[in-house]
Image 1 (tube, rainbow, N blue to C red):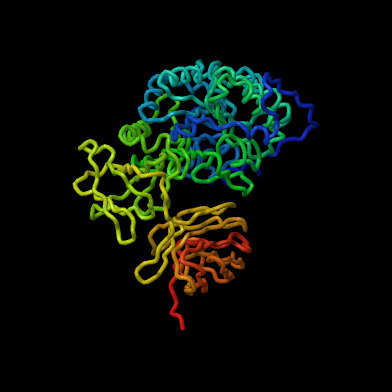
Image 2: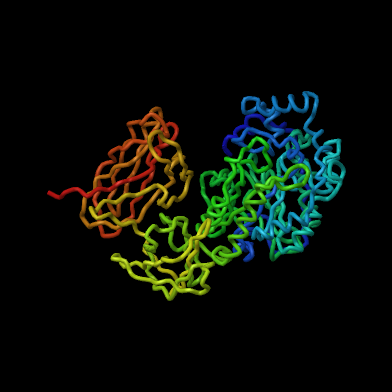
Length: 617
């Protein structure tokens, strides 16, 4: 979906190219950094951000008045959907019917009154939700500012900030003051690009000099945010935005240099490569030039409770995530070393829709009991579990049970380190230690008999004898068959990622998808028999017009290649196909899939691999 938005922008926005004036240098008071990515990369991600794990995204502006778009997309793009007549003209038809053909987008500003906005109530909700920080849209792509930005109105020729029109108040200042009282760190989203701005469209270098840079310096100086979250950077390289100059100034001139943290959205193709942390959006990195993300920096996933970021009145109940889904999404991201920036879209009157408040408070109630398994933790030592997720904190391993075992016996497959004690967080009998036995495979088995599962996710705290040591290899069943699911694969590099496509006659299951490059790999560590030959079958899908690719299958030192020359009818038409044979070289091997050549659209979609031992003659 994000790629569709970017494509639309590319097709519809053709800026003029006048002679570029000389850029005005940004004055700096410090000299710790140079305006180069190599120098700026030495900035340390603040410890508070590494420990926070949960923030709240807020999309609020004049687009909150119509609050409407197709449910597949974002309502804060209302102006763009209208101008481009996108989604079958859905927004334009709605606009003409409700507001009239002569009603301009800028006319929404006077209707954006925020008359019920209570920043103290907002901040209290955020604290009760367990959020450690917020990020609010100081200015989205429509250019409207939630603070007294004189330049915004001067360039447009009409009032275009929240102090001159609409609410007639400094929305950012009011909210920041109350968040700080509640101990919630405030942060700012800021869009580089601007739709319908005459200066942006006709003289972008002048726009950067006279609008963008002054606005960024203004909000950094005025509000001292703990998070700066640029966006709208994807059309142009960082040199055109003068990103390194801006970031050097921020690092050296912010009044909270030890706390401020910035994201990776600083220019075309740079996501995952620069800044203090990486941002993904609905599990999509996007705009990274296929380079992926740095593993030495944390990542943050932004997504809505509904689908749209700003409030969309067209979204029905089924589109909103449930309480359990919100909690599990937070756990899942933290277990993978990330954090969640969960979005809310307030109404134009300044109230937060109650379904969103309900979800936030449910997360907070769960964190009140289980927060120690989230805050300050690191990536889970055990990954790709069928029953849930794990997080780690020094010698403590937290087990998050999405599925309570039917026999009340939880086998912690893969954990090698000894366990000193096991406790259910929130147990009615405080401090009760759980019985631990050992499975036939040598892994601990924890008895949960007599315990009551949490409404959403139960958490078992394991105090270990030392740092967790794990054996994550996948083991064969009693017949020696290895069944490997896409959801258990380690995916590295490129654009390959998990997706879930509905397939007729089959239950929904994630598959390896978007295999459009030769740098991506998917791998599993497996327990095998040295010298054993395996027959390889795959549950896969290939669009008939996209055959012609070649896939490499490597098991230890042995490798086989497969020509993708048979389609299944479509990318969601999954069928079992023979992938050939391969021989194991040791009792523990890495099975790796890699594209050697990609077909016209993509290589292949894979849900499962099955390795069946062949009888040796």
